Image (cartoon, rainbow, N blue to C red):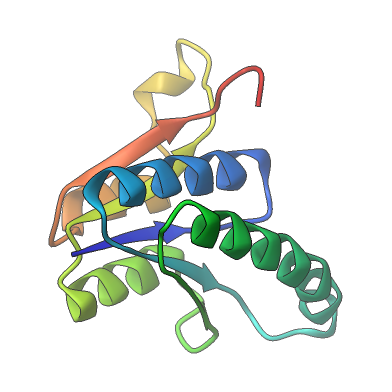
Length: 134
């Protein structure tokens, strides 16, 4: 059993990680964190800060009894495709994504990556909405 989560270094991304860890702990299964990025000099600087954050997150997962693997994918540069590919490869039980709160009008339009993941995922998708206190 596997939970796959897409991660961006945003509040929504962190909320998604928290939701994914809760889900993996509840299901007693492995957690795979997927980072989809372009390889650029700026990305290298951001990656250093992100690595520490994810190392801390992996330790938290370990303390809660959850095996956590981080995969950084740079080939496709497409978040939706990368998440769907990893979910398919691992026969994931669920994909977790973090979503931002939207205005009433914005609720009519879902982000393009989130929409593609929801429509094309080989497994159920858990959308974690940003908690105002997070």
